[in-house]
Image 1 (cartoon, helix red, strand yellow):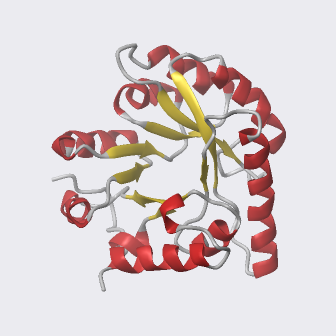
Image 2 (image 1 turned 180 degrees about the horizontal axis):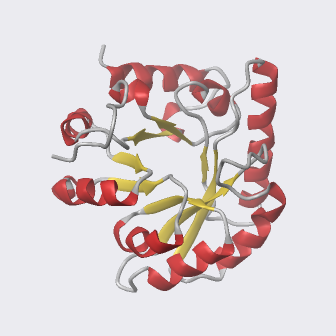
Image 3 (image 1 turned 90 degrees about the vertical axis):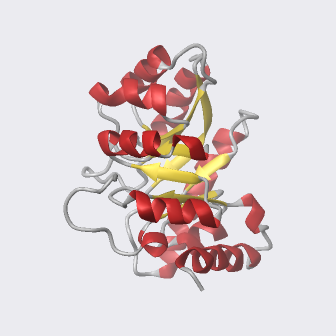
Length: 230
């Protein structure tokens, strides 16, 4: 069984436990620092959604794979000087966490393109080294995005701190689910709760995640140094 098939099997099993359908959970392949050869192999296996964290690296891959009609998500911290590339070249930005980024993405998204899909990244643990807004700022940012004609708010993204205690891990995902449901309850277009990675996708899916972000379990260990885009 391939890595891809194993990950899909995990998603299916995790969805079945709470009675969910695996069709309701999207797999985002985290392809940062992975070669075009490995990405192409996943595309041939049927994967269409890819997540990148470094803008310059991602642009080379987007160009090289343009004929494949893939969906590109930016999932890394957003730097102000990179927002134009995000607005012009990506389909989704999952890591919107402050007003300045909302304004720049909206101003820089080309009018001839469909509105940019965005997620608000929330930092549930208040970790200073991680991007993401405080939970009590979600509604403020959501209102800004609602008023931005070149953006479409689709939901929330989060990267909770790892927890060894399964009950504690479950509790943090349950809290994030509540934040997502509160946001979705006010907006018909909010449909995406991006949470869960290789180590914790089961807990995330049990608590309503609609998109899991998986890298190493799909591609194997990342190579040392910069990524190859040949």
